[in-house]
Amino acid sequence: MPPIRVMLVDDQMLLRTGFRMVLAAQPDMEVVAEAGDGQEAIDILRGTEVDVVLMDVRMPRLDGVEATRQICAATDPPKVLILTTFDLDEYAFSGLQAGASGFMLKDVPPGELLAAIRSVHSGDAVVAPSTTRRLLDRFSTMLPSTGKEPQHKEIEKLTEREREVMLLVAQGLSNGEIAARLVLSEATVKTHVGRILTKLGLRDRVQVVVLAYETGLVRAGGSPGSA
Picture 1 (tube, helix red, strand yellow):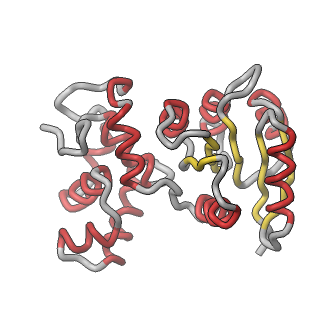
Picture 2 (tube, rainbow, N blue to C red):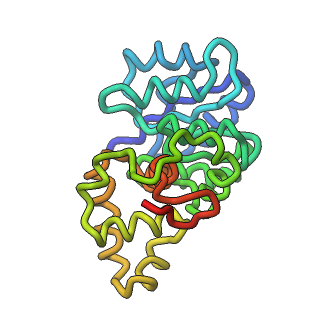
């Protein structure tokens, strides 16, 4: 298999150097580009094939959130992993809404960073559902929808079981916990989650959680909405 092509985006050159050294030691990873701000990252991506972008949020010219939004709006975009200083950061929340596949702390141990890159590349989210729920609960006032009915029409395509699984994902349950709750095998739950992602056009379960809150399917606190 070809190595995972990674792009480092951070205005601190020393931090990029440290990440590059860690990634360069991995046989399955390759740093193919670096940028000092979001605008430079977008410009470079126009001519460079990248699989995963490690994106800082606080940068000059164009911050990481807006850069993530523009990158994820493109056709067949790379996965974006937000790097943040605090785990309950409003920038991390905005990054998830913008399309990032998760976020990591900047001081994360190298092993966890490498595992996160591999997970994002394979299509998984790297933010634990419970962490995502805490983040969304804290910033739920930023969510635009307060209506009783789902605003995302694609949700109507879900079967009753898929909608049930989606609600449990949004409440912070893992596949194993959902399987126990619904008396299903974990493999069956994973299949349901995959179908939900496909039908709703979402990248990973982080985006499922965000959508569930935005549409009112789940309220702040992780409880089901009245829809």
